[in-house]
Length: 235
Image (cartoon, rainbow, N blue to C red):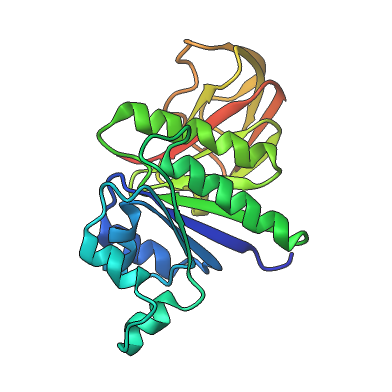
């Protein structure tokens, strides 16, 4: 398989920077988008950023100027801002900054046309549950465009699925796998797990697919009808 072209979106929710630093060492990021306050995390972690966007209502002005200043004689700032794509949106807008970043990522991928693409989102989970839930569902836009999209933090790896998915036990993010229907009803088969299912009709509001575990080297999730959110989690 060809090397994946990975786009990293850093949003302004909570991010454990110590964990993120170690996670980034395992990832080969091709393109980075900082969404509004996410620029603070990008700067702290020293990530090379290609695009910053948002209304910048929650970004420290000094940090923003550092990346916007294309006339600086400081070599570090020159390298940070070289070929930088800076997009500014009004505070009153139709989409959240994270959603705009997902749209931008899809646009960048479509321009490349061919290849294997993934989007990873850090800092999209926080104390505002409304923002967190919205961010999860906004990943559907990438999924509908045929792009695998993952929301990741120290405790969770979250993604959308409407077909077959294999999870290797040695590569899973944590110890548990939970499934929540996106559509009103889902027909689901689970194999290789502690609690397997066979053509199970899973309705919204039923908690039967919480905190499952992978029992073998790999588990299979087969969505025969509908669409689900998969959570690979740890306590």
